[in-house]
Image 1 (cartoon, helix red, strand yellow):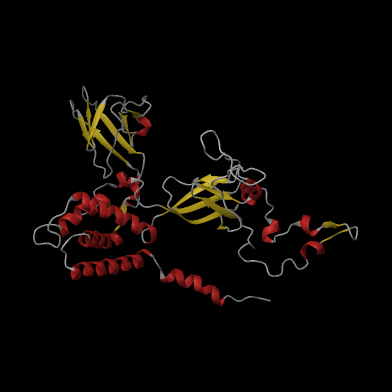
Image 2 (tube, one colour):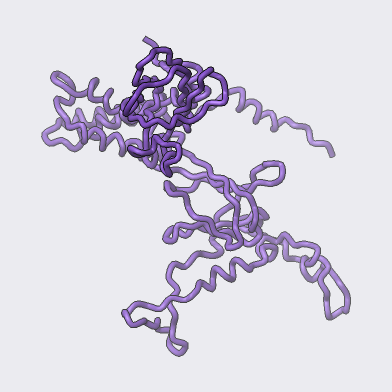
Length: 389
């Protein structure tokens, strides 16, 4: 029996049409792999404020041709079975459109299936794990998703953002660590933005007494807080003075000693020994972990950026899909995690599963690295490029 159950229409168009021809029919059974969800009991109504929160739309057309109109008759939903509260369905065509597609989901296995498959294959009489609670398997499976997401799974997410006038953007809700930040030019080409050690984002700004520098407290015995002066200085900084990328204003500055405009006073000797860490016109960023913001240098205001980051794979249902190339490594991880915390378990057995987990995880990393010989060859061709003088 094949593993693909959805039709091409269900997969590519995220919709399914049922031609209702029976008089007196009160229910319609849809067969999406995705579970259809009503937000609440009243969200079947297109005029309800929560209607948009459903993950599908039910529409009707008498002829089966557009336009389809939303169904406004009360119904209930259970396991993709739509049942009318009263009356029966009129003869015609009923279309369900999912608001999200499941493109590419076949390449992964859901966390629920991982747990079920593990219990079937590894748990029971005569097996390596005689008995275990399902909750324990779920816990170790989720921990495996988190650990694998950091350095093994394809868990890199990307956000397209614009840098506002205050030079700060808020970290995504499921952010764990950053991968790369880049600003995008008019051609759509990315230019990497690097972190900087030149400045930092203070999290506390206590107001101090002028004479001795002691912080001043309020009526609740807490330090009074001021505004961050360092952030203000950094946002007003001229990046050309840091990177060495002088513009025409610096090249043609006025020299009072000789009463003339000259470039020598601003460039002579200043480019010798530049620090590669700061010799970068793409700008800089710092991350304020406490406030949950990313701050950028002043030359990036108004720029369109791509923010690449990793999550832990547990934030959303769509994230909790394990690539099939990593499925066996996940089973090995769960088995080792369960055996390693059990009392009176032979150490040789624990070490065996530890080695098994390590080997399968290494194979998974190689598989997911997705190296293609043709692509590597294409890049290496640059080494033999002829440079004309």
